[in-house]
Amino acid sequence: MPLSPAQRLIAQNQSRFRIAVCGRRFGKTHIAIRELARHAAQPERTCWYIAPTYRQAKQIVWRKLKRRLQSINWVAKTNENDLELTLVNGSTISLKGADNYDSLRGVGLNLLVIDDSRRPRPVTMAPAIEPIPPITTTAKTTMIRFDPITAVT
Image 1 (cartoon, rainbow, N blue to C red):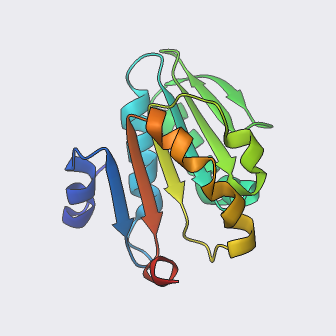
Image 2: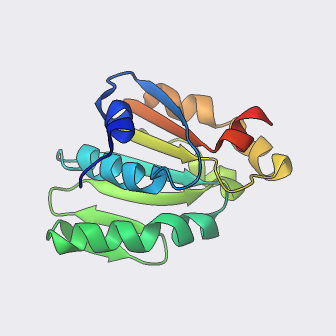
């Protein structure tokens, strides 16, 4: 999946925490899918993508991610109800919503992508902030994506 020079800077950064403040049409979804695939390419990895709501996770990423990984024969099992892909190497990629913050607790992760881009409501996101530090302490890599308007509010 080719990257623009700006996307390449984010992808090549080896920091444990990467925060990307990017405008519309930057390709945030593209780089998120690429990073999920890159980390899940290693066996037995657990990778999560969290959007403000479960519905947004499905609308923003699910079809593109599923289609991309199925096209290269990486998918062993697709769980449409849980928005989870199990890959042939035993890795899993799961899409989550911050609106169900209890579902975000207690899992050790290898990659966590937090997408805060679609006008998150403080009431919705506030409860999700509490479990994030425990998640990010176990995640090997965390990438947080923001639109510029979201980042300053």
